[in-house]
Length: 123
Image (cartoon, rainbow, N blue to C red; front, side, top):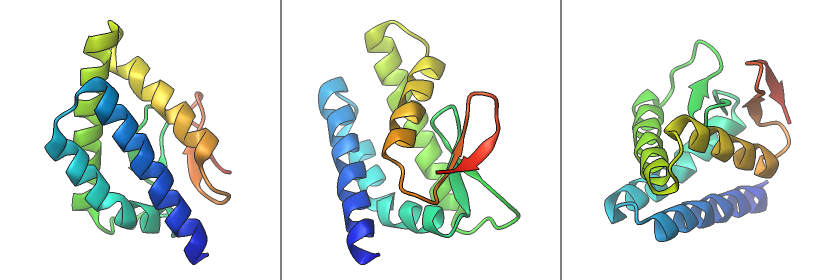
């Protein structure tokens, strides 16, 4: 289980580095997102949050554990998606949905994901 968590952290870090390196997103956003990864992974493992279809974290139940971290992550994701959208000439919504598809492909068994119809499922 510990190895799986480390693999997730590395994979998410690489995804962030890829996005920020290619699209010139501010270094401070990259740093903040990296620092939140362990908390986000923990929340996902507990089933508290899942990845919605638009590329954002969403609470799955009544627990709002680490709500400040989830909100901060979503704010930074929105900024990243907007920067990528501007560069690619598409909407930020499209970028978020593409990112959601990437996240879903790399998600670990048991993680909560939302499909295009808004239905939640566990991978």
